[in-house]
Amino acid sequence: MAKRTVVGVMALVASVAFPLVAYSQPRQPGAIYDFDRKGEKPGPAPSRDISGIWVPAAGAQVGVQADGAQLKAARGRPQDELPFTELGRKTWLARKPSVGVTAVNPALTDDPVKGGVTGAGCDPVGFPRLALWNLRTIRLIQSPENVVVLYMLNNKWRVVRTDIAELPKEFDEPRWHGYSVGRWADDYTFVVQTGGIDERTWIDAAGRPHSDELVVEERYRRVDREHLQLTLTITDPKMYTEPWKALDMSLRLQSPTFDIREMECVPSETAAYNEEIARPAGNIK
Image 1 (spheres, one colour):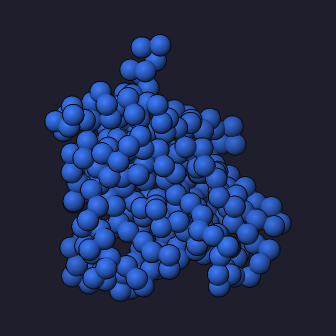
Image 2 (image 1 turned 180 degrees about the horizontal axis):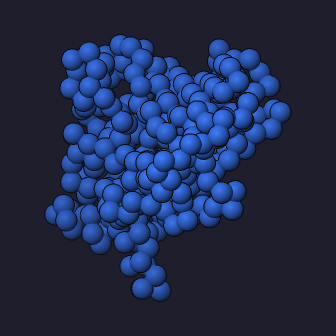
């Protein structure tokens, strides 16, 4: 039993508490990346089809995004700056993430997923953080009524409705992963709008905030037979003065028999890590 706990805690350190460790693992077992197919000329994209198993085309480390959303310098802003409102900046600076430009000692984090000083951790990751942290594999399943997105991280899934035209004006109650509605913008681009997201979630592991007015737009563009371009845009007028792009990533299609490994946040192992490693490291009794 003791051995199992140690193994579980170390796995947690690698996959949850210190995602930077994953950068030393450039690939998932059995995955095919673009660097495996140099000189390849993929066939044409099928019409209105984004189904399949997809991984970051450039390698597993691309999807880890340990410092949160992938930000690019734009309009003279520093790479890690965002168009915060006064409330947005105040909320962000009040948080204590364990990664990113405002990172603290992991023992002192108030990240609801990782625990730290807040307790056991393992609160739901929520959306859009599911797509902005440890995005190693997703599986897309299409039906006439919806598109289902399956994530490796904590074995979560989202249902994107395609039987209605747009998001409702009001939501019954907030949800960890929100309410999602999708449509085909053209034969190769599927656009998803998600709202009604629980405010307890963080946008990413770096603690970037959102309000009840958050709307996330995903665009899945089928570039060719082997590739899917995924972009994600954040709109939240309470926290940000303008929309901003949090993700722009090329995904590569995998074999339908690809083994999707589980990545679970186990409360008992998280608590053991915090008690045995994080709290002593932070000199917290």
